[in-house]
Length: 419
Image (cartoon, rainbow, N blue to C red; front, side):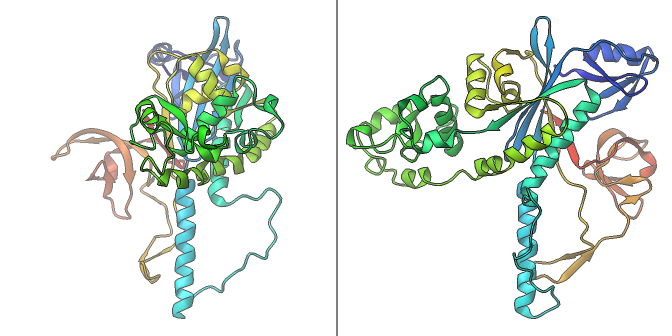
């Protein structure tokens, strides 16, 4: 169960409390709601208090990152809060590509256009493409928010997803390089990511998968990662001593040679994220993806981004999870577009935006509470609104006048849901 963040009267973080305790404080008038997401209360009289060590643990991902807060109690380490952060790197990349295509089209048609700029300009040290930079910015934003809401004393990050040196050439420096408990976990996790956690021959999901040689070892097949795949037990036994092509699946060899685009995004940002986390002044520990999976499977936990975050590094070897966890799902949506004129697919102006983002004190994306006295939508409603210049906003697929709305949570570039 998610704990509730607590602040003292001077907005200094205290240890998160149980939801029942938070309800009692709110009912007694000793606390007030400070923030809805993540849910935080502020005490009206108390100043300071004893705190335990709390570690922010991060499992960076290309599309979704896992975040967990692990507190060190006397009875052991325990997850007190967790979330899954969905990035918008793919949306940013697609928007940049669309803009580039529109500009290129206008130049070809000799209509109004901006002259092309070529990649001969210098870039600052450590520059990353906007789609990758957004992933780092989202993670850092939430680390800072959690530090303001909870007494965080350390950070743990999954720094290296896969040991690519070991996987590309297992005999790079002899068998002693690949000895150890974690070697097979690194390779297996890489293969599961590449082949989307399903059998490459029959397509079954949610079944035990085995590491399988595309070209059998008995016929000269190597241990290189490009000769390995995952298959269910039945297909592995039926394939026997055949190659994947002889078994009727020549496409498997081609898939095995393809790079992992999502893993490339994670690898491109891992060190930048690590250096910026170190700049926070907190001690930062790291671990590999193979070790994360080893910790998770050893404790018998299911696969989830936030659970992987809790199991990152050495401190993830023994972590207690509640029986009814409900992590907060956070989706990055951005703060809107600065584009004042929208275009159609041919690049010609088709729509215009007003200069003001707010109307009647509300902004698109705000979480509101609506009390509608009459009509077919009479009753109470909670949701996010889409504003218009006229006093008729969109809420939960119907129109509502702003006079019936009460603001609950300002839009801040993220949407929230309890998964």
